[in-house]
Amino acid sequence: MRRRSAAPPGPGSPPVRVVLVRPSNPQNLGAVARAMKNMGLADWAIVELGTHDFASSRRVAVHAEELLDRPLLARTLDEAVADCAWVVGTSSRRVRGRVALAPTEVAREALRRAPARTAIVFGEERSGLTRGEALRCHDLSSIPAGPEQPSLNLAQAVLLYAWEVRRASLEASPARAPGPAAGAAVDSDLASLETLLRTVLRASGFLAGPERHAVRDLVDTLRRARLSRREVRLWTAALRTLGRKR
Image (cartoon, rainbow, N blue to C red; front, side):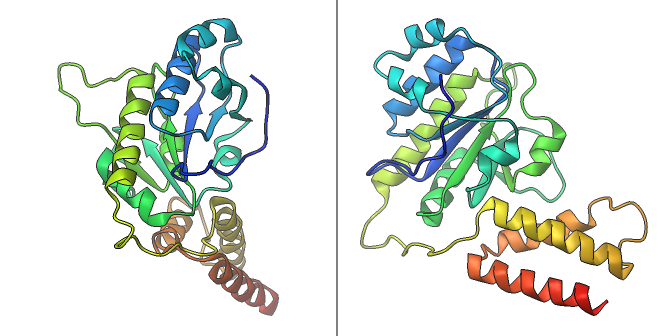
């Protein structure tokens, strides 16, 4: 594997990025690459790659070996999703303020948000996403597996979501498809806005003690509004003006 910069999806590919956080099993990486190619996905990122046994990955990839040379290798989850407009974490955790979606709902919403990019985030094989990582995502999704064995293999989970995305793409009617959300704000835009909002609220006295979840809840309302980049610039200008006035 080699590090690359984020690239737009190929022709006909849905604007979805598969993000793997701390994967350590090389066979899983090969199987994920194969599952993605099966379903027409090519954009993926790996956060804190935990294996260098690339030969084992290639043996499992089977006709998807080229994808193993094309992931975005990221140091942090923030870096992996910075250019994504919607970030969905796959987790069965119940997190305050996070909508729990079925895989089918994730796929349909990802298509509605196109051409803005959606990231679907998968945690490491043994314990999944941490609570902090789940909070970092905009919404959450889980697969309603049987209670006797609710945990799926990483590659199986990726395949299921990738299939739902492909099915949504195939079923979408061009006559009914919504127009593209031009200039949609991406995660890094909203992260910068969150930092500025925190600074202004702290200076104003609104945040007098521990922050807890106040800023996060306020920013979540903006995320749900699907702001454009122009609207983020307007919010930013307003908050900076308020900060200068103080």
